[in-house]
Structure formats: C-alpha cells, structure tokens
Image 1: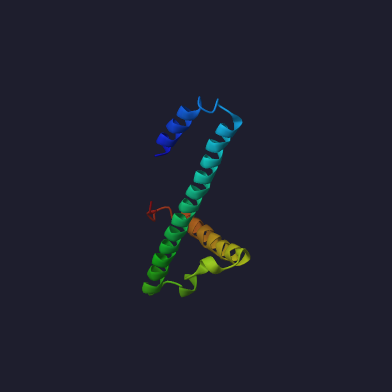
Image 2: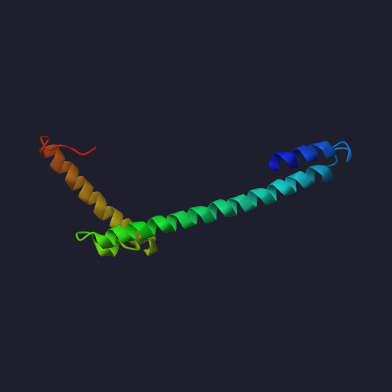
Length: 109
C-alpha cells in the first residue's frame, strides 16, 4: 500500500510541477505514518514485556526455593535495583572464585 502511495505521489508530480507543496504532502504523510508505526511497535513491545514478566512471576511463585520478593521487582526504584544487582554480582564473583579453586567441577555452559 505504501508503495502504491509513493507511485501515485510520483505520478502526480508533473501535474503539480514538482512544487514545494507537492513535496510537503509526502513529507507530512510519511511523518504521520512513522509516528503511528512507532506507537504500534511500542504498544506491542509493552504487551510482550508485560506477558514475559507475568510468566516469570508465575515461575518464581511456583518454585519452592525461589525468593518471592523477586516477583514484581520491575516496580522497584533504580537505587533498589542497583543494590539488588550488586548483591547478585557478589554471588557471581563468589561462584567464580569457587570455580577457580576447584577446576575439577564441571562448568555448565
């Protein structure tokens, strides 16, 4: 459909003598179409992110050893998320140190 619009626009160029107004029509049209597509893509991404968060929340809730405070962490402030990330970085560093001391333990890939 967009291709047909461009072909029609180019076809009408000689009728309007390729004026500035003629060029502004396609410019305005493409700007509006781009804006609408960005809204559509953003809405789709938001819905997808929400679905993924709900699935992860269900997995956390269903697992006996999981920490339930991880449910809905996307609502935490940036400072709280930074603190949580630092905690997990310490856990990762500790795990890497244990792996370095015990090279005979197989490493999951």
